[in-house]
Amino acid sequence: MSLDQKQKIIIALATFFFITLIIVAWVEGGRRRVVKAPDAVVTSENKDCVDCHRVKSPGIVGQWEISTHAKSGIGCVQCHAAEEGDVDGYEHEGRLIATVVSPKDCAQCHEREAAEFQASHHASAGQILGSLDNVLAEVVEGFVEFDAQGNKIKASPAAVSGCLQCHGAEIKVLENGKLDPATWPNTGIGRLNPDGSRGSCSACHLRHNFSRAQARAPENCGRCHLGPDHPQKEIYEESKHGIAFAANRSRFEPMMEEKEWIPGKHFEQGPTCSVCHMGATKNLPITHDVGERISWTLRPPVSEKIDAAAIKAGKRVKSWQD
Image (cartoon, rainbow, N blue to C red; front, side, top):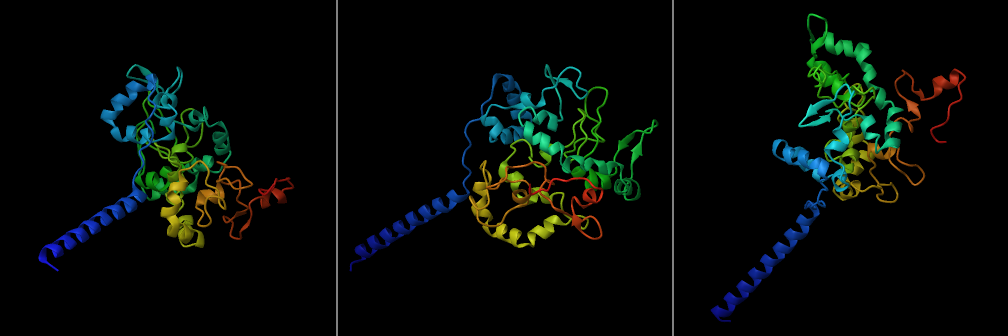
């Protein structure tokens, strides 16, 4: 075989391997490639907001543009618009708006979900503000600053990080309609809102893309349900469910963004917290009352059925299975 023939064979093999590498890289990369979302529908009433915030806060606009809201033309005004008389309404660039988007605002479109949430234990999480646990965080472990009239002007860092960011704070409004920085920002699940509603949808549905996959991820619940006093995240991660989900996560994640994600139909193992406590099954619809399916309470020294106290009191209680 001549030298020229050897060179041609080497070139051919090198070309073949190079093309093969490109094909493999394309196939493997496709599994992780971000699929461009359909163009956001920017309505005329939202155009000024989007144009301005694309410069001042591009991250927020970028999140919104890949959301289901954006595809449907639901934008800034639909969620943040305020009405005359709203305690937290203030004028901004010629519009009356409110910074806080409460469950009452979300209920304009998501009426059933908001009603279920308001009936849940999550919506009552702000009751910790009057408990001894909160006193421990604010007085014993931290410090609180008050003005001459006795109003709190600076919250305890221990209370903010350890209690309020998960349980929620009472959002107070200043005279100019802006929010009191001693109470805001806050997305605690039981937040007490200026409009009288309780809770924060964005505690789980992080703004501004409100991804289903993100809301269904176990880390979403684990942000609050962790630690020695409520170690659900650690328990889940070490359980068979958690181990199975971690092993199959890359396969599940594309499905988790879909409207339906039903065990036994779309996946066969590794349910997350939301699957069992909230998700649709073949026989049950989705619920936003996370306590609706819980049958046992672990709070007493000896665990008991969640409705045991009511039954002892002679009350007729509907079973969670009915």
